[in-house]
Image 1 (cartoon, rainbow, N blue to C red):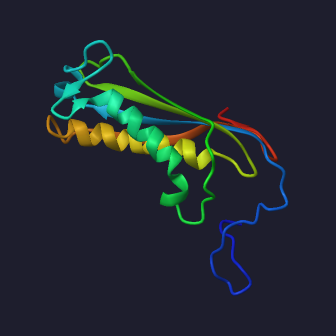
Image 2: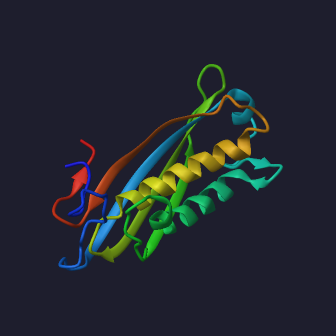
Amino acid sequence: MLSHLDAKNQPAMVDVGGKAPTARTAHAVAVVHLPPELARLIANHEIIGKKGPVFQTASLAGVMAAKRTGDLIPLCHPLPLEDCQLELKPGLADAAGAIDVTIHCRVACHAKTGVEMEALTGATVAALTLYDMGKAVSHDIVIKEVRLIEKTGGKRDYRVG
């Protein structure tokens, strides 16, 4: 079932009232491709742009977004996150000098529902912030993928094979 509908066939939040809170974690990744002209600006795993430190700002934006996921995604339960960590890791340059930056977002809480959406939202908004702050140098930035790597808690755990 892809959606939850109420008695009037309208979208509704999933009722988690009868569930017990359990420890929940999730790890999502976004990959952002930076063109050579932007990749060249990285020193000590950071880019300092007109708006300030790009990776630090993207990380902060990701944490803020993860905390607000319930406000951003319709019918998503607001969750009291206990931890949210973002890490941006620039990879090695390819032959043209471009790099991929991998953004890891890890979240945790004790709740009645999972935190996958919080991890995915955090990684996505960090990627969008990286794009926003880098577009002054180049619009050839590509957000290549966003995906869930792992989740624990609830009915079953999930890990990318």
